[in-house]
Amino acid sequence: MAKSPEKLGTSYFQNPHSLHAQLREEGPVVRVEMPEGFTAWLVTRYADVRAALADQRLCKDWRKLAAHYAASAAGDPAGEPTEASPENMLSVHMLNMDPPDHERLRRLVTKAFTARRVEGLRPRVAEIAGSLLDDLAAHDRDTVDLLESFAFPLPVTVISELLGVPAADRDKFRAWSDAVVSSVARPEQMRTAATEMIAYFTAQAEARRRSPGASDDLLAALARARDEEDRLSTGELISMVFLLLVAGHETTVNLIASGTLALLLDPAAHARLRADRSLLPVAAEEMLRYTSPVNHATLRFTTEPTTLAGMDIPAGQIVIAGLSSANRDATRFAEPDAFDVDRDSGGHVAFGHGIHYCLGAPLARLEAEIAFGGLLDRFPDMTLAVPPADLRWRPSTLIRGLERLPVRLYGAG
Image 1 (tube, rainbow, N blue to C red):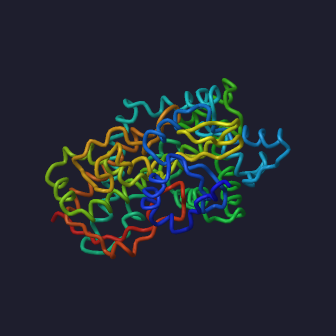
Image 2 (image 1 turned 60 degrees about the vertical axis):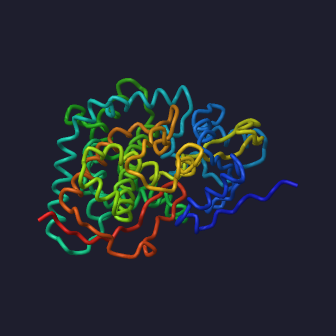
Image 3 (image 1 turned 90 degrees about the vertical axis):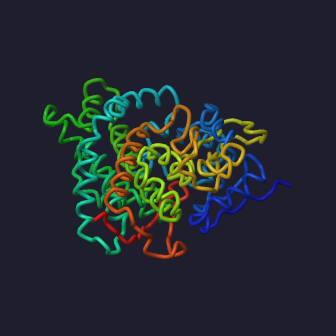
C-alpha cells in the first residue's frame, strides 16, 4: 500500500526548516500534501534539488500538464483554472516556459540585467536607499516597522523605475503580489488581483504603443519587441511584466528583512559586519542561504513516468524543488542551521539553478549590499523591538518572508 502523503499544515509557514530536516532524513523525494490542498513530490536534499532544477524532463509549462490530463480524460485533480482565466493569463512568462519558448522570452529581458547595466544602477539605488534612511533618521530611538519603511520600498521603487511604472502605485503592487504568492488567499481574491494587474499593465503597455518614442524603460522595450518583431503576444507581454515586478521585488524585500533579523539575533555577526564592511558580499550570500527568501522553486510537472533521485514518479504529477531545504542540507553546508557571516556559501540555490536561474540575481545582490551597508552606517545599534517568538511569517509556501519587522533605531550620532 502506498504511503499517505506527509501533510504540511499551516505551521509550515512559520517554521519550514524543522520539517525539511525531518523530510531529508526520510528520503530524497517525499510525497506531501501542501497547505494549499494539492499533492506534490518534494525534493529535499541539496544534490537532488540541483539535479531537479536542471532536469528538462520536468516541464514548467502548466499547459502540458493540462494536455496530459485532457489526453487521458482524467480531468485536473489539482483544480487548475482554465487557460482563459486571469490567473493563467499571468502565467505565460519565461519562468513557466520550457525550451525553446523559454529562451525566446528570456532573451527579451536579459540585456536589462547584465552585470554592467546593473552596476550602472548603483548610484540610483544608493540614492533611493539614502532617502529612505533619511526618513528613518527622524525616528531615532523610536520603534518602526523596518519592512514597511525600508525593506519593501527600496526594491519596489527600483523595479518600478526600471519598468517605467509609477512608484506611487507600489501599494497596489504589494496587495497584488501578496494575493498571488499567498497559500491561503481565496480563489476570488487571487482572481481579483490578477484581473486588476492585467488591466493596469495593459493600460501601461498601450500608452507606450501610442507614444513609441516617449520612453526607453523596460516596459516600452517589451512593447516594441511585441509590435515590431512579433515576438510577444499580448498575454506574454503582460505576463512578463507581472513576473518582473513580482520577482523583481519579492526576493529582495525578504532578503533585506530576514537578513536584518538574522543579524539582530546574532550580536557577534552584527558586530563583525559593523567593524568590517568588506565582509558584506560574503555575508549577503550567507543571508541568502540561511534565510532562503524563496522557500521553494515554482512548480514543475511530469508528463511521463520519471525516476528522480531513485524515486519513481508517475506522469501528471507536481514536483517541487525545496530551495530552503537544500540550503540547510548538512551534506553540503557544515552546521547548516548556524548563521556564519564568514562562511563560503557559494553554490547555494536561493536563486535557483539551471536555465531558470534568477535573471535578477545581480540586482538583488546590489540592492542588498547597499541596504545592509546603509543600515549599519546609519543605525549601528539597532535592536529588535519585540521578542523573536512574536514575529510572524507570511502565509506562503513559495515565499519565506516576515509580515512585519519592528525594530528600535539607534543612530550613529
